[in-house]
Length: 442
Image (cartoon, rainbow, N blue to C red; front, side, top):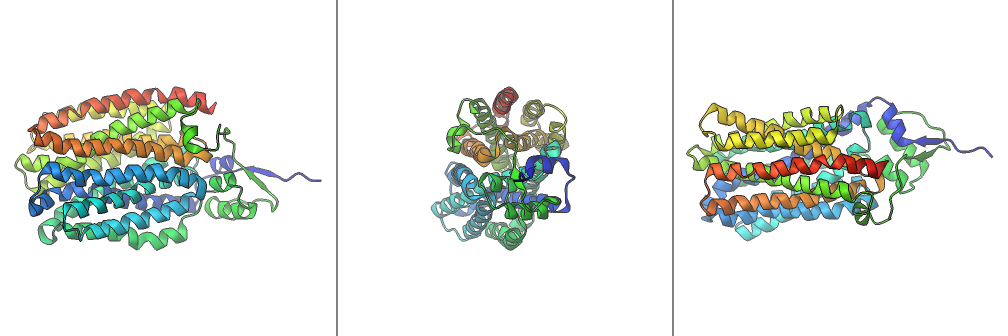
């Protein structure tokens, strides 16, 4: 009896050049992450107008600011195990429909309670979209350029966050904050049919779930190219996982160190980024500049992060990835201190905002690109999503802390300067990850 030929999918993808369909998949994931970034950042630009219209305090509005991050955290924690069980594509499509619909409905809110609830539901979808997109793309690109390509995808998040800032600056004076929310919700829903048609299921997931070889061959040929024998058996060369329960695997002996390091680093990074991006427009407005100028300055933080993500991803593929990320966090702490001491009306202040975004968002994006390499296929979505979910509590802390500190009378410089501490802690935590990763995946 003739043995069936075996094809290692991981080796097949790594040995080939990127196909046109793989580049298309990168573009589609970029668009998803861009609309994700728009919806995540949108409330920071609308906060001054909403608080003024409804006559509420900044501390009270902190509940609205933290509602979406809370939904993000819960959505991420839920989607990982579900994605590892039911597939990347199903969870991704459902999450896009969810966050687009509820963001659109947020435009019709008439109270802080309604807006907080709708932002929470929006966050559930947002939290599910990011890990699904990250896991899917990481399983379709060559490992030699994975960090660069994932970083390129994540620049969509920074670009989307920046575009919503410029869009808010253009729309707010003429149409009001409700129109900004309508546009932010409609965009992902318009693109949804395209995603449903063109985004494939992960072939690595299909192998793990023992899908029919004909289906695996058809999908792999469509996305990556190549010819396979009719009776080919598809495999992936990865270490076995110690348990069939993904969450338990994350905290098992081989993966515990990786997992805890990623959780702490992501938590600290998001604490910094959310406090800055969420409250910087208000802080700058308090310093005497118009809201349009405040929105444009804050958008520079996201634009800096777009370039920083590409630079960090490029060097991660060529140097020790965790050291590159740690260096970016340390440099981010330095720029934050300069930002705290700057004059909001000066040209240097705009440069400080740009460089703080370059380093902090660049490091955070690098961490997103680094996480999939730390886990094998059966638990990869869970590993990525739980890092995002646990880390999201850092964004909740940052969103609420901004309102609390301002209500306590803290000034601009003090609120910004204290963020250098969590940025440094993130750098220290990620340094230990590579050693743990070698032990787990050896």
